[in-house]
Image 1: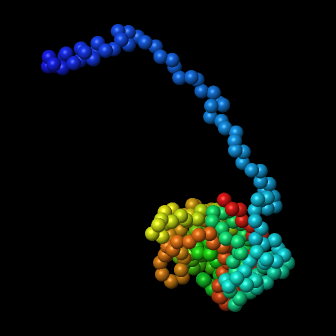
Image 2 (image 1 turned 90 degrees about the horizontal axis):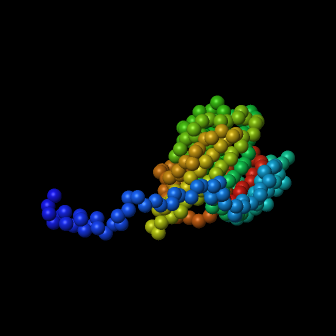
Image 3 (image 1 turned 60 degrees about the vertical axis):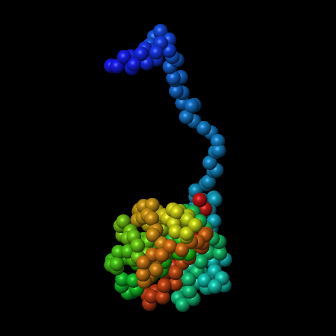
Amino acid sequence: MKRQNLIILAGLIGLLPLNAQEKKYPERAPMTPAMTEYWLPQPPVVTPDPIPSDAIVLFDGKNLSQWVNSKGAPAEWTVHNGVFTVKKGTGDIQTKQKFSDFQLHLEWCIPEGIEGESQARGNSGLFLQGIYEIQILDNYRNETYVNGQAGSIYKQTPPLVNAMRKPGEWNTYDIIYTAPTFKKDGTYRTPPTVTLLQNGILLQNNTIIRGNTPYVGFPEVKEHGPGPIMLQDHGDPSQPISFRNIWIREL
Protein backbone atom coordinates (compact mmCIF):
# COMPACT_ATOMS: atom_id res chain seq x y z
CA MET A 1 0.00 0.00 0.00
CA LYS A 2 1.34 3.43 -0.89
CA ARG A 3 2.49 5.73 1.93
CA GLN A 4 -0.14 8.33 1.02
CA ASN A 5 -2.93 5.76 1.32
CA LEU A 6 -1.58 4.62 4.67
CA ILE A 7 -1.68 8.18 5.97
CA ILE A 8 -5.30 8.61 4.80
CA LEU A 9 -6.31 5.31 6.37
CA ALA A 10 -4.67 6.24 9.66
CA GLY A 11 -6.54 9.55 9.66
CA LEU A 12 -9.82 7.85 9.10
CA ILE A 13 -9.17 5.38 11.88
CA GLY A 14 -8.36 8.26 14.19
CA LEU A 15 -11.79 9.73 13.65
CA LEU A 16 -13.48 6.63 15.16
CA PRO A 17 -13.90 6.14 18.91
CA LEU A 18 -11.41 3.68 20.36
CA ASN A 19 -14.23 1.51 21.65
CA ALA A 20 -16.35 1.56 18.42
CA GLN A 21 -16.13 -2.20 17.99
CA GLU A 22 -17.19 -2.77 21.60
CA LYS A 23 -20.22 -0.40 21.64
CA LYS A 24 -23.59 -2.13 22.10
CA TYR A 25 -26.74 -0.84 20.37
CA PRO A 26 -30.32 -1.62 21.41
CA GLU A 27 -31.89 -4.61 19.72
CA ARG A 28 -35.08 -4.24 17.67
CA ALA A 29 -38.17 -4.13 19.85
CA PRO A 30 -39.94 -7.51 19.86
CA MET A 31 -42.98 -7.80 17.59
CA THR A 32 -46.42 -8.13 19.11
CA PRO A 33 -49.62 -9.21 17.31
CA ALA A 34 -51.12 -5.74 17.69
CA MET A 35 -48.32 -4.20 15.61
CA THR A 36 -49.80 -5.73 12.41
CA GLU A 37 -53.49 -5.30 13.20
CA TYR A 38 -55.83 -2.47 12.26
CA TRP A 39 -59.52 -2.10 12.94
CA LEU A 40 -60.79 0.71 10.71
CA PRO A 41 -62.52 1.02 8.37
CA GLN A 42 -64.77 -1.94 9.09
CA PRO A 43 -66.22 -3.57 5.91
CA PRO A 44 -69.96 -3.06 5.51
CA VAL A 45 -72.22 -5.92 6.51
CA VAL A 46 -73.91 -7.64 3.54
CA THR A 47 -76.42 -10.41 4.11
CA PRO A 48 -76.08 -13.01 1.35
CA ASP A 49 -79.40 -14.81 1.00
CA PRO A 50 -81.41 -15.06 -1.14
CA ILE A 51 -79.86 -12.04 -2.89
CA PRO A 52 -77.02 -9.91 -1.46
CA SER A 53 -78.52 -7.03 0.49
CA ASP A 54 -76.42 -4.47 -1.40
CA ALA A 55 -77.34 -5.83 -4.86
CA ILE A 56 -79.35 -4.00 -7.51
CA VAL A 57 -82.12 -6.32 -8.66
CA LEU A 58 -82.34 -6.18 -12.45
CA PHE A 59 -85.16 -8.68 -12.75
CA ASP A 60 -87.43 -9.61 -9.83
CA GLY A 61 -89.69 -12.03 -11.70
CA LYS A 62 -92.45 -9.45 -12.18
CA ASN A 63 -91.56 -7.01 -14.95
CA LEU A 64 -88.84 -5.52 -17.12
CA SER A 65 -89.01 -2.07 -15.58
CA GLN A 66 -85.19 -1.97 -15.30
CA TRP A 67 -84.76 -2.66 -19.03
CA VAL A 68 -85.26 -0.85 -22.35
CA ASN A 69 -84.65 -1.69 -25.98
CA SER A 70 -81.74 -0.27 -27.96
CA LYS A 71 -83.78 2.87 -28.75
CA GLY A 72 -84.68 3.54 -25.13
CA ALA A 73 -88.29 2.36 -25.42
CA PRO A 74 -89.75 -0.24 -23.01
CA ALA A 75 -88.38 -3.76 -23.43
CA GLU A 76 -90.82 -6.04 -25.25
CA TRP A 77 -89.59 -9.48 -24.21
CA THR A 78 -92.21 -11.72 -22.60
CA VAL A 79 -92.54 -11.97 -18.80
CA HIS A 80 -94.30 -15.09 -17.46
CA ASN A 81 -94.18 -17.29 -14.36
CA GLY A 82 -91.27 -15.41 -12.77
CA VAL A 83 -89.03 -15.52 -15.88
CA PHE A 84 -88.71 -13.58 -19.10
CA THR A 85 -88.20 -14.97 -22.58
CA VAL A 86 -86.66 -13.49 -25.70
CA LYS A 87 -89.37 -12.19 -28.03
CA LYS A 88 -87.66 -12.73 -31.32
CA GLY A 89 -87.64 -9.87 -33.75
CA THR A 90 -88.06 -7.15 -31.11
CA GLY A 91 -84.33 -6.52 -30.73
CA ASP A 92 -81.79 -6.53 -27.92
CA ILE A 93 -82.62 -5.22 -24.46
CA GLN A 94 -80.36 -3.40 -22.02
CA THR A 95 -80.46 -2.04 -18.50
CA LYS A 96 -81.46 1.55 -17.93
CA GLN A 97 -78.61 1.91 -15.49
CA LYS A 98 -74.96 1.94 -16.59
CA PHE A 99 -72.11 0.23 -14.76
CA SER A 100 -68.33 0.08 -14.50
CA ASP A 101 -66.82 -2.59 -12.21
CA PHE A 102 -69.35 -5.13 -10.98
CA GLN A 103 -70.35 -8.59 -9.81
CA LEU A 104 -73.22 -9.97 -11.88
CA HIS A 105 -75.47 -12.99 -11.43
CA LEU A 106 -78.01 -14.25 -13.93
CA GLU A 107 -79.71 -17.52 -14.78
CA TRP A 108 -80.72 -18.73 -18.23
CA CYS A 109 -82.47 -21.74 -19.66
CA ILE A 110 -82.45 -23.43 -23.05
CA PRO A 111 -85.95 -24.74 -23.86
CA GLU A 112 -86.41 -28.48 -23.68
CA GLY A 113 -86.65 -30.07 -27.12
CA ILE A 114 -84.69 -27.28 -28.82
CA GLU A 115 -83.61 -27.94 -32.40
CA GLY A 116 -80.73 -26.72 -34.54
CA GLU A 117 -76.97 -27.06 -34.40
CA SER A 118 -73.81 -25.04 -33.86
CA GLN A 119 -74.62 -21.32 -33.59
CA ALA A 120 -78.24 -21.84 -34.62
CA ARG A 121 -79.34 -23.39 -31.34
CA GLY A 122 -80.26 -21.31 -28.31
CA ASN A 123 -78.05 -18.40 -29.28
CA SER A 124 -78.00 -15.17 -27.28
CA GLY A 125 -75.32 -13.07 -25.69
CA LEU A 126 -74.54 -11.11 -22.55
CA PHE A 127 -72.78 -7.82 -23.31
CA LEU A 128 -70.73 -6.27 -20.51
CA GLN A 129 -71.01 -2.47 -20.64
CA GLY A 130 -72.98 -3.06 -23.85
CA ILE A 131 -69.71 -3.82 -25.70
CA TYR A 132 -67.99 -7.06 -24.65
CA GLU A 133 -69.95 -10.24 -25.35
CA ILE A 134 -69.99 -13.33 -23.17
CA GLN A 135 -71.60 -15.97 -25.36
CA ILE A 136 -74.85 -17.67 -24.37
CA LEU A 137 -75.55 -20.79 -26.43
CA ASP A 138 -76.76 -24.36 -26.08
CA ASN A 139 -73.57 -26.39 -26.05
CA TYR A 140 -75.05 -29.50 -24.51
CA ARG A 141 -73.92 -32.12 -27.04
CA ASN A 142 -73.71 -29.36 -29.64
CA GLU A 143 -70.25 -28.52 -30.95
CA THR A 144 -69.31 -25.20 -32.51
CA TYR A 145 -66.17 -23.10 -32.91
CA VAL A 146 -64.65 -23.00 -29.44
CA ASN A 147 -64.34 -19.22 -29.17
CA GLY A 148 -68.05 -19.02 -29.89
CA GLN A 149 -69.40 -21.56 -27.43
CA ALA A 150 -71.15 -20.76 -24.15
CA GLY A 151 -68.86 -18.99 -21.70
CA SER A 152 -66.46 -17.71 -24.33
CA ILE A 153 -65.44 -14.11 -24.72
CA TYR A 154 -66.97 -14.11 -28.16
CA LYS A 155 -64.46 -14.63 -30.99
CA GLN A 156 -61.59 -14.16 -28.49
CA THR A 157 -61.14 -16.62 -25.62
CA PRO A 158 -62.77 -20.06 -25.31
CA PRO A 159 -64.03 -21.25 -21.91
CA LEU A 160 -61.75 -23.50 -19.88
CA VAL A 161 -64.43 -26.24 -19.89
CA ASN A 162 -67.93 -26.97 -21.21
CA ALA A 163 -70.19 -26.78 -18.12
CA MET A 164 -73.59 -26.85 -19.86
CA ARG A 165 -76.66 -28.38 -18.31
CA LYS A 166 -79.09 -30.11 -20.65
CA PRO A 167 -82.00 -28.21 -22.22
CA GLY A 168 -84.84 -27.61 -19.79
CA GLU A 169 -82.44 -27.07 -16.86
CA TRP A 170 -81.26 -23.68 -15.62
CA ASN A 171 -77.69 -22.46 -16.05
CA THR A 172 -76.09 -19.79 -13.88
CA TYR A 173 -73.49 -17.20 -14.78
CA ASP A 174 -71.55 -15.48 -12.00
CA ILE A 175 -69.26 -12.76 -13.30
CA ILE A 176 -66.64 -10.44 -11.82
CA TYR A 177 -65.84 -7.66 -14.28
CA THR A 178 -63.25 -4.90 -14.11
CA ALA A 179 -63.83 -2.07 -16.57
CA PRO A 180 -60.95 -0.68 -18.65
CA THR A 181 -59.14 2.60 -18.16
CA PHE A 182 -57.85 4.60 -21.10
CA LYS A 183 -54.85 6.68 -22.11
CA LYS A 184 -55.25 10.09 -23.74
CA ASP A 185 -54.91 8.50 -27.19
CA GLY A 186 -57.93 6.25 -26.55
CA THR A 187 -55.99 2.99 -26.11
CA TYR A 188 -56.25 0.86 -23.00
CA ARG A 189 -54.22 1.92 -20.00
CA THR A 190 -55.58 -1.17 -18.30
CA PRO A 191 -57.74 -3.57 -20.38
CA PRO A 192 -61.07 -4.95 -19.22
CA THR A 193 -60.89 -8.30 -17.43
CA VAL A 194 -63.51 -10.88 -16.57
CA THR A 195 -63.83 -13.91 -14.31
CA LEU A 196 -66.78 -16.17 -15.15
CA LEU A 197 -68.27 -19.20 -13.45
CA GLN A 198 -70.99 -21.25 -15.10
CA ASN A 199 -72.93 -23.46 -12.72
CA GLY A 200 -70.20 -22.88 -10.14
CA ILE A 201 -67.41 -24.00 -12.49
CA LEU A 202 -64.63 -21.61 -13.56
CA LEU A 203 -64.71 -20.80 -17.28
CA GLN A 204 -62.74 -17.52 -17.46
CA ASN A 205 -60.05 -16.71 -14.89
CA ASN A 206 -59.34 -12.96 -14.79
CA THR A 207 -59.18 -13.09 -18.58
CA ILE A 208 -58.09 -10.00 -20.49
CA ILE A 209 -60.62 -8.76 -23.05
CA ARG A 210 -58.69 -7.45 -26.05
CA GLY A 211 -61.37 -5.12 -27.42
CA ASN A 212 -64.94 -5.32 -28.69
CA THR A 213 -66.33 -8.64 -29.91
CA PRO A 214 -67.52 -8.33 -33.52
CA TYR A 215 -68.93 -11.23 -35.52
CA VAL A 216 -66.69 -10.27 -38.45
CA GLY A 217 -63.19 -8.89 -37.98
CA PHE A 218 -60.74 -8.48 -35.14
CA PRO A 219 -61.24 -6.74 -31.78
CA GLU A 220 -61.10 -2.95 -31.80
CA VAL A 221 -60.50 -0.64 -28.86
CA LYS A 222 -62.73 2.41 -28.55
CA GLU A 223 -62.73 4.64 -25.50
CA HIS A 224 -65.93 4.51 -23.45
CA GLY A 225 -67.36 5.12 -20.01
CA PRO A 226 -69.88 3.17 -17.94
CA GLY A 227 -72.28 1.06 -19.96
CA PRO A 228 -75.39 -1.12 -19.61
CA ILE A 229 -75.84 -4.86 -19.28
CA MET A 230 -77.25 -5.96 -22.64
CA LEU A 231 -78.97 -9.22 -23.69
CA GLN A 232 -79.07 -10.23 -27.33
CA ASP A 233 -82.02 -11.08 -29.54
CA HIS A 234 -79.85 -13.18 -31.85
CA GLY A 235 -82.30 -14.09 -34.57
CA ASP A 236 -81.35 -17.73 -35.02
CA PRO A 237 -84.33 -19.93 -35.98
CA SER A 238 -84.38 -22.06 -32.80
CA GLN A 239 -86.79 -21.66 -29.91
CA PRO A 240 -86.14 -18.59 -27.69
CA ILE A 241 -84.33 -18.90 -24.37
CA SER A 242 -85.43 -17.57 -20.97
CA PHE A 243 -83.81 -15.66 -18.08
CA ARG A 244 -84.48 -15.19 -14.38
CA ASN A 245 -82.92 -13.97 -11.10
CA ILE A 246 -80.64 -11.22 -12.40
CA TRP A 247 -78.84 -8.98 -9.94
CA ILE A 248 -75.67 -6.88 -9.88
CA ARG A 249 -73.33 -5.43 -7.25
CA GLU A 250 -71.28 -2.37 -8.10
CA LEU A 251 -67.65 -2.77 -7.05
